[in-house]
Image (cartoon, rainbow, N blue to C red; front, side, top):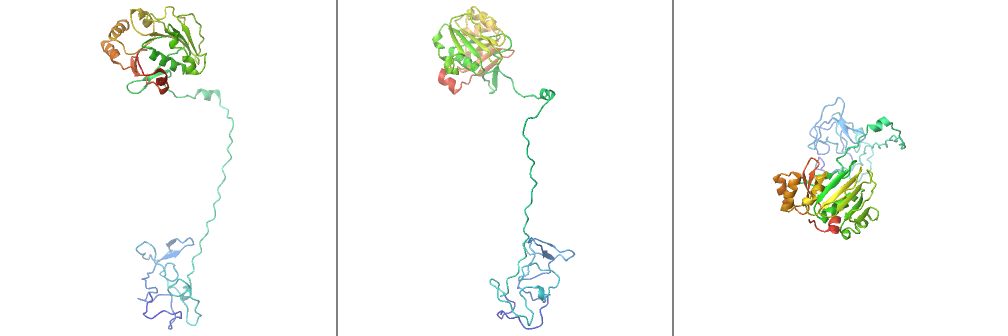
Length: 346
């Protein structure tokens, strides 16, 4: 609003020249103006003028601006010539500007400094290629890992139970259980690269097993009854000879070498199978009947607690005795194993 009650015209008011200092009690814009001490910068920021009195800011923390020029008010007197929009007596009135309540010219805007793009130093070109390493440095490289072996299942804490089925020395194992557990064990041995020979009195139960499991015919051989066979074996291609020939087990055990393992399947434990059990380095057991459990206790020197546990295991559970530790585990058959072999059973 204008200060006086009369309308504001484009002609300057007659009277003495307007000085730079505003008259006491007569603000120029109708807004109280204080003697600020801020000067504009080229990038529209404000900073305190050097050696100037600290003037108050408005409630928003922004310095009070001159209503005509739009620049912060300073405490020093401002001459009329330095204020755009004010005209001395006798000077020609500039044309009215649009958008100003005082009918003056549009206040000059401070020029912005255009930020020059910052030039970044280019990255050095990468040189990818072969790098030579001494033998001494290679010997210091270690690959961390856990125990290796055939993953037979998981224990009560869901920790994997690994079995050293193949070793650099002859190994003999016994499985007191059914055909389902024998098939799962052989299938997982094939996953380790083993070659398998099955000696059985019922070849029809194993026919087509190798073709289904590996897609080849040279990984699994099925023999009717016991026969003398020589199977080569290495650390990357071990040999598993499975004997499923009745209650006695193998009558003529083969001479084993490194990375060769004999697995004797006893579908029922009786005194006829004691020699095979006693000659084994490790024994796998499914759930046993009462008579089998006490027979195992007599030949393996089992505790009464172990005898009771062997009779209450589930169909998908197995006990591993030997190897300086007795373990109870869940076989956890995969979808492929369940689809091919059916539900777990003894």
